[in-house]
Amino acid sequence: MGKDVCFSRAERADLDAVCGIEKRSFGAEGFSRRQLLYLMTRASGFFYVARHNGTVVAYLSLLLTERARHLRIYSIAVGPEARGAGIGAGLMELARQCALERGVASISLEVKSTNREAIRLYERAGFVKKKLLPAYYPDQTDAYRMHCPL
Ligand SMILES: CC(C)(COP(=O)(O)OP(=O)(O)OC[C@H]1O[C@@H](n2cnc3c(N)ncnc32)[C@H](O)[C@@H]1OP(=O)(O)O)[C@@H](O)C(=O)NCCC(=O)NCCS
Image 1: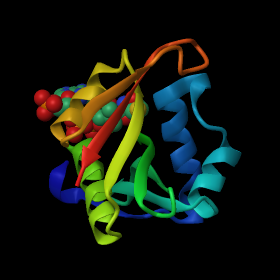
Image 2: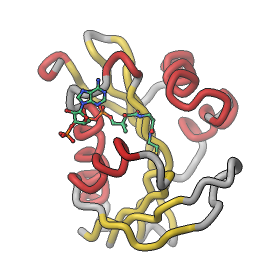
Image 3: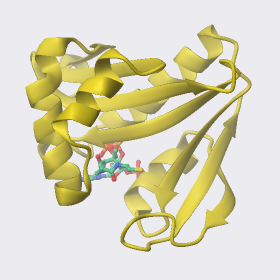
């Protein structure tokens, strides 16, 4: 997939594709269309998509917090058909560049303690587990809060 993938800020026209990725990645636990539109257009942060041959196959939502001193990876998903090709790693690198360009001190995220693929992706990108958050998610699953110093 490598060379045919490009990353860019999302546009309003990408919303349908992003909703589809969300549904196929998180099912009923995913964000609603309205929440995704908010994250894309109004939230304090950045929303990126990855395109493969022009088709949106992944997204990354970043939030800028604490007076812009801190970047949070709010959500990341790669469509099931596009996984295992390095797109997740590419999005993590994008988050890192975004943080460095803005001079923020660190990046953080929360992840289900059971999501081994995501935790592996984050650890490869330099994140470390900082805290266990018991019953953090609506289904009572624990989360890890992970940090990446810059
Ligand atoms: C976690 C996620 C973003 C990773 O994205 P990705 O594009 O598959 O990530 P990469 O290709 O960069 O790396 C995936 C790893 O799995 C391997 N892999 C191989 N085939 C794979 C496949 N069919 N599916 C998934 N991973 C595969 C990759 O080689 C890589 O292995 P490595 O760690 O040994 O190098 C993706 O699985 C996803 O969207 N999951 C559902 C949503 C989710 O859980 N998001 C995180 C919420 S906190």
